[in-house]
Image (cartoon, rainbow, N blue to C red; front, side):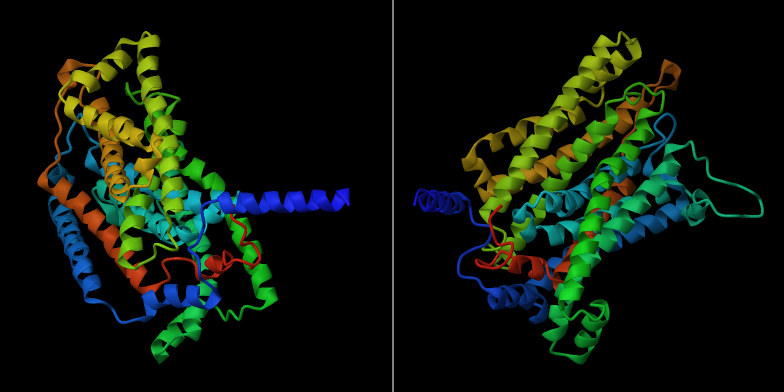
Amino acid sequence: MARTDEVETVENKEAKDALAQPPVIGPGYDFVSITDKIASIVQRGTPVGWYLGFAIPFILTMMLLFAIGYLFAVGIGAWGVDIPVAWGFAIANFVWWIGIGHAGTLISAILLLLHQKWRTSINRFAEAMTLFAVACAGLFPLLHMGRPWFFYWLLPYPNTMELWPQFRSPLVWDVFAVLTYFTVSLVFWYIGLIPDLATLRDRAKSKWAWRAYGFLSLGWRGSADHWHHYETAYLILAGLATPLVISVHTVVSFDFSVAIVPGWHSTIFPPYFVAGAIYSGFAMVLTLAIPIRKAFGLQDFITMRHLDNSAKILLATGLMVTYSYLSEAFFSWYSGNIFEAYVELNRIRGPYWKMYWILVICDVIAPQVFWFKRARNNIWTLFIISILVNVGMWTERYVIVVTSLHRDYMPSAWGMYSGSVWDYATIIGSIGLFLALMFLFVRLLPTISIAEMRTLVPGSKGSEAK
């Protein structure tokens, strides 16, 4: 009898704990309603609002193509880069876009391995965000080469001149790191899509859609054997993708930290860049999740719990970035190196002081409102802060690149840099390309994983709130 009472007590405690947890999915949903809700976004007719929204990023993408064409005709001098600032917007944009891509891998891989069910509603478009951000990032190093049609010189391949890449150069490391990251992320994203592509195939209303989704779903029938192989492959890829979150941006930070330039030559850069990447990535997740849930009525799937958790991660990584800023300032003073100390003082009160204080306000001060639950539960506060963090993180990369280069060891080598109209056209155009790809993704593929959302239906396997 005592044993029975003990079991009942444990069961009651678990029930109370489950009720105390915020819901992962809104009430009243079953397998059919979840499938209908998510699949209808793709299968219904294209709304006029989608065309109006897509028109803006499409125009910006055309501006990007025009800016690239002008760059090919004139050369990278059109960007305003010169000696001593040979790196400008291009490298700052590259690091910024790579950082944005990190949140998708974190949400998909690491949170999957940690059995965090709340990731399910946001992992699909976060993974797509990763792919599109890495694609935008890859443009800038190629364009910065001046002759991007010779990009294959960075790849080790047998050739008659016996020329090989300099494997001791971090720029070559970037090629391998970014390509590996993109490849693993693409395969991980595609494997997660296969059950949903089969669902769209079975619900297709036209022959071309049935053929397209049928080809992409690789003959998926949902058998136990299919699910076994799917879950095994998904878990293995999650394990492979997890170290990439750390390794890729660590390699990107080596572009700076292995140099002897004051302001760059620091061992804090690898963890500093990784924390900053996750910081900016989750800011972009919030920036995208809030309009998507509103436009398609997904408030029951992307709940306030998801936004609240994302805001908490944003606050945590923001504190890590703040710690890195303080450590950087402390090291420059404690090292006794006059050049390192000067770079830090020059950032604070030199010609680029406005940029430095913009990043402090956006990256350090603004996210502190997330200490308060009321701020984390306010949609407009979340959206505005996420945009401010994205602006601040781009400004941080600009400050790192430009302020460390514009005043070298010798005053005779000092100079000033400011982006030209073509710099701004390129970065704004790349944002347009990113948003255009997101619009196409939302229109053609399930924004939320149908198969994974079904596991959250009460009574289904794996539906426990985590």
